Length: 425
Image 1 (tube, one colour):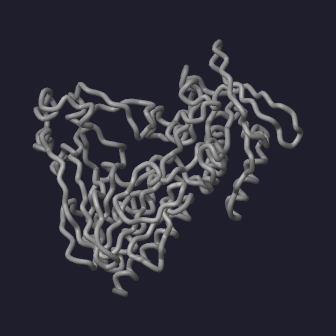
Image 2 (cartoon, helix red, strand yellow; image 1 turned 60 degrees about the vertical axis):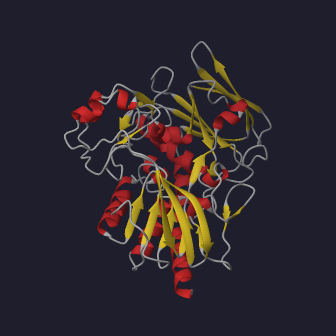
Image 3 (tube, rainbow, N blue to C red; image 1 turned 180 degrees about the horizontal axis):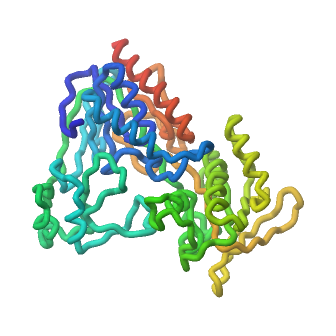
């Protein structure tokens, strides 16, 4: 694996985004003999999948699959990886693109052995975005225990820079370069796969659901991190306000999805994610009550339907068909009352719980940051594939909301489309 190599010509493929779709597309193309340049804006590969505790419906950890993919990348000399990298500009046509890639400074070079000595002396802290701000790291940090590449990175905003230098003094390997600069490289490629992924919808935009106002309201991805052994609470699900083991939790489905004021489409994964989260809670707290407020429940496919049926058999999981109108905090105990109208009985429901989880929607990253390329983008920010034109293709959640399995399948197909562009030119 290299992080700074010029393309040999237009017989190469660029993959933008190092999440599960990008990893799949890159490996599928490289393992049939094509040179691939994998560009990722974060300091690590793995994307959203690396933040998950378990996949549904098998409830297995994603770490095993990621570890296999990381090994495949390390072992394949045709895959060239650029982390902390962004696409600055794309010029050209199918079969012949010139791509300018901006490489942001990591401030840590390849000498790093992840010995942790620098972290021990670093005086500065930063919010840990990998855990959605629920804990802190030092300004020099490893993003997470399975981060690939396994190399520390320095947050330039939090770091005191050369005015501090304590990390430099203790590093035995000359791995820290506090004056490292941004640079831009140009790559010549024949086709581009955009696997830019998704971002959880900003729950603070929904004033009636209380996120950011009341401490015991979290999002579905925050709960995923709380349940993870490498998360902010070492896998223990607890109320943020007092670290209490919750005896009752409510899930608010379609939080921002299927609403013209926010995301007008169904985000596909939220229903199954909440059913999975119910298993997390029931495993840790056998007596806890789980209330799921939903508009419709979507369990696409036979395996997912069986998973849903299994959850319905749990006598401590209650399904309420009704859109949540508001949430109200009791200031005496920080409990939350969820208010909704039961669409079946017509009754107004007021359910008090100790914690609320918002099943926030899936927003394509391209909706939040403009990409410097000639791409067709829908009103919702998803990329529209133009197969007649060819050359550039959207994979996974950059194209539409999808789960991990669907994203992998789609990414494999887009790898084939990218190869066809090279073959047919």
